Amino acid sequence: MKENPTLDTLIEIAISEDLGNLGDITSNFFIDDIAVSKGTIIAKERCIISGPEIAETVFKRIDPSIKVNVKLKSGSIADQGDVIINLSGNTSSILSAERIALNFLQRLSGIATITNKYVEAVKGTNAKILDTRKTTPGWRVIEKMAVKSGGGNNHRMGLFDMAMLKDNHLTNDHDPNSIQQKIHAFKKQYPKTRIEVEADTLEQVNQFVKMEGIDVILLDNMSLDELSESVSLRRGSIQFEASGGINLETVSQVAKTGVDFISVGSLTHSAVSVDLSLELEP
Image (cartoon, rainbow, N blue to C red):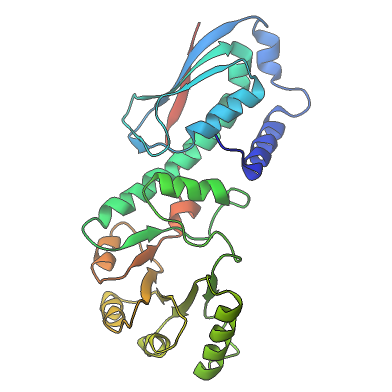
């Protein structure tokens, strides 16, 4: 796996909080130092895998002598009972790394799995599923990686790589001329950076489609009719993103309105970890 300082820090924090200063006192006391085992991490339910490479790094960080064979890579479909990783090595070392590795693997696979359900729900349309910045603090890079494992797309990584004018940014400035001047100034300083603006009403959409320099209009909490009407106002290469309260029951209908993107915060803030387990044998 490529070097990633953020991931390295997360792994070190996870190891430190689990092993503390004394290490795995249960394994150290009750398992012979020279005991070796083989192990398999298996899926207990159908899911999309994400993060086995991270799990491998965890095992190797605990004990470089552990042999790790990743059978299913990120983005793979696992059915119930499928082997994701085969392990062999010192028994105590494997057990010391078990929960840390599974925490990463279960959480990220949960995100990939729910993302894939949304992606499948909009098949046949032009809409792409996007994540948001509603991520676990410190985990954003790997949670967005998990979204991609599930077939989704990443929205902006942070506040630094895309300008997004939301209602709170416009609280003190509703003048279209003033907003247009600021957009021109922004594009002059950051010519390759995209600008997205939030619209809560059709009146705002009408206003924004006439402006220069806007790349995407975020249609926030609009009805299906409002989404369709907004898309009909498209000018040039401007794109539309639907957001707000969209779930698996509604996402297909939203996609059929013609929007280009559908952002879903629950991909990361409400994903349920999938059921995986590590089974050991002598």
